[in-house]
Image (cartoon, rainbow, N blue to C red):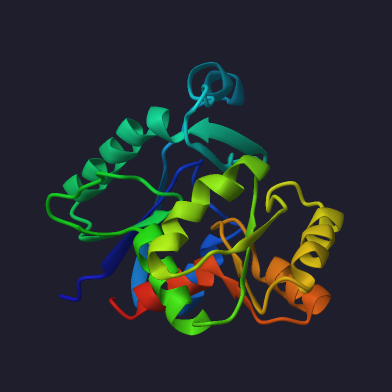
Length: 226
């Protein structure tokens, strides 16, 4: 009897993620079933805005609703929900779980599964590639620029940030952010799982620079473990 391997993917928004999950499925190449779950599954946007919106001083995150709308949430408010999702996936027998978010979540844990957190993988990987070159980082929200800087500094990186949401479907904001980085960076990272290959190509065309896509980095690395 052949047992089909399963890879768990937890988004901090709602599942499924037709915008970005295909990248991961392409790299899995049929070797494993992708099982998706979302922290906000079953919730309305009104519920989310009423109970999970960031308060003063809280760490701000953004993700995607099932209907494609963007939503902004507080890390402090969703982290317990995220931890429960991890344990629920473990209880179904999944032993490799990818957190589908590049934000920093201190203290997450898994009892049996191998939990893969992009914030622990991407900065050192990018640092090894960038070395002494200038790094430009594109993020979805203006407030995230300074909030995300500390995850790069321990790796010798002090990025230049630009802002364009992957969820607004606004090509002009991507072009404007690209122009902001064009003469200030040598390499660009799109620091959100919501950026697509189409966005990567647009930024590369606009800047003339190498552009790295966070979900592609994780897809390539995780697919090697399956």
